[in-house]
Length: 146
Image 1 (cartoon, rainbow, N blue to C red):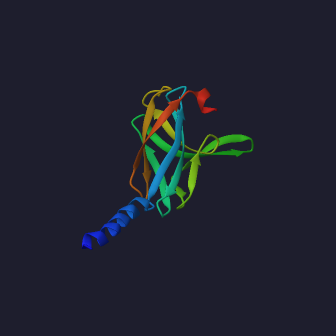
Image 2: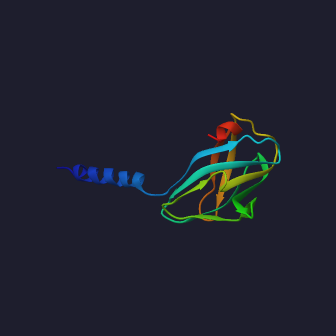
Image 3: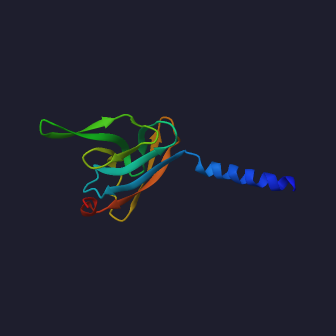
């Protein structure tokens, strides 16, 4: 048998292992309820960390707003308030949900009012990962409640 006959299975296995390598960071179920004014808009999604290491979100930026902040909603003494978070860690193998009443990205001082049916392009920034650009569908406030 030729050497190629012995090398071919090894080459195929090495290519397969490249595609099975952990290292994915995915964002799923993203949406933003259409805002009622140009002061702010919220963005919700789930991030899954399969990179093999802990990651740290540090914020984001978009052309739709002058500022992007990460917030956690807290209820204290019957009052609801948002606490700005400079960083949010996500452990390896874990997922984290940004959802109403909890963690969320807040677009502050909008440059226009995104309408339902359009998309917002958001760049998410990390301390120890390359930035990720995601597209966020803008939904009507009624659809956001479903």
